[in-house]
Image (cartoon, rainbow, N blue to C red; front, side, top):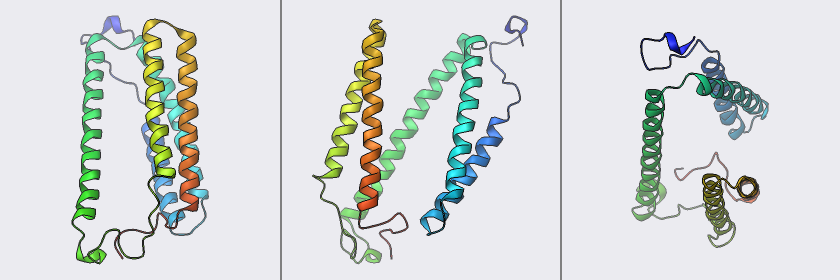
Length: 194
């Protein structure tokens, strides 16, 4: 649609297969994750990951194409508000997560034996792999901030260099997470409640 013929400042999206494809991918990913945690094969989970990646590539392609031709100032304003609300929702999620953690650890319930950590849970030393992962996250935050600053200043070479460092740190972080999970004395199917 040629946006010069519009009688409003908003971008109305064309029909798209990506929401349905994303829902199917989410179903396979969730069902596969649950089955894998319960000791079944991991093929359903892998199908979900592949479907999700295909959906993301297709959807992002459409979004980038639309953003170059269809976004007006009103749409850009709405996208800014959407990002602000997303960040607020992330802050609320982590507040709830830490609230639950501190409630369980500072005021242990009878269901956990009245102790923290619950009986039978072997904890990791926080100054080994968890400490390394914290350092990796902080360092990647520093490098992406540096990359952002380089982008603003127009230094493309430094931007790409710092962006590469950030991605490398992220991949390293994920590798350490996988190593930690494989060698941890507890599994996803465990929990603090018996």
